[in-house]
Length: 530
Image (cartoon, rainbow, N blue to C red):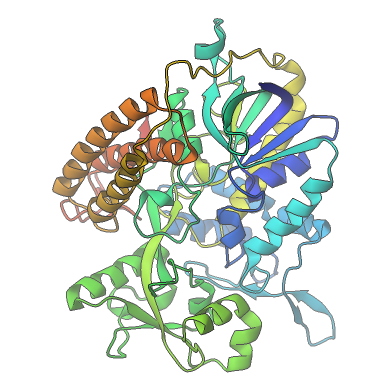
């Protein structure tokens, strides 16, 4: 089976849906989602979107905060570009009907309520209570479903990009993707003149993560196999405060709580963040995560605690209703109880190398959102710059596709998916075992604190796993679990290679063998060639 569109968008988070809505109405657009259309990391983003909207703030200040958090590894021009476009993106979302939180002013008017988060020198976080991602995602989803030119494919899992390796011809081009239609248990070829990877990050490569199950690095792995460069995969952000409870599945406790005065405590009730950074609880995430990890290991403690008892119950219920209700489910009253927290893998700062338009090394292929490397985040992402990047690059990629698609070749005829030499597997345990083993050794050896020996062990293990996965992939009919395992193993290899290449500690990459910055060289991103 084959379907043809002008634009194929793989992924349905904030980046993918923004692009779909920004494209001209005359283009035939397909949006693929691994599950329901709204399911993905964007849906669970709590904090908000950073943008300069008040006179006392400035673009220069936001850029400076971004560069500082990125530990001198951001691209300053990219940061300036994204931050300059931020206010326009917020106004576009308001025009789309996103219900951002507001505050009453002394003159009787209302304005957007702004949070402050770690690493920011001003209040500039636009939010919808503590469920900003849900407000943005569900609003955009509703609009996409009404567009006549957009066709939605839910429960479709991309397997691989269709390139000249499948089609033939001398001119390199992305021609579409092979996609597993889970409802009908078949692989279909989806051809398109332009393909956009908006697949999100790869935090599911770690045992503990705040991300939903679909964050398996699919776009990064597919682009790498298609010949695109990737960069900075060693920089994996661990959110410092995820709810610690056996049934909570690492539920995120927003950084905005610390922006509202939340204090981190040891089990004995003493504070510790000022022992690690003068900014205390408002230090960037990498510093806070390492501090919590250090104290847990030093004390043999299962978790640390976030204390919001200085705030009245009414304030907590109004500003953090989702977190308040979730804590209540687990018997934690955040008005009178400190919240148990641990770090968990949260955001992939590296990804597929793209330019200002979201273009990759492969003509016809774009990558936007968390799957991309734009240079914005450097060695650590500043809080609430992620949804902003999705919006800005969703817009710039849409503009470029609209301007250039008439010059792209018509969608080529891809060969059908070949299943003539495979059988149904009766050894699904192999997939589940390898999935768990991969995530376990990545957490143990390539986590918040690394060493050369740990990375070497992880490299040996991923090589063995990939050999098993290739053999399994070649002989048995594919499933969504197998596709994701294959992609996770590829992403794990890329993370390990990048981490072994960086012989210093910078931002989110911290190694006991090289605990200091390497000041002898100008900082550069780690770029891997396929």
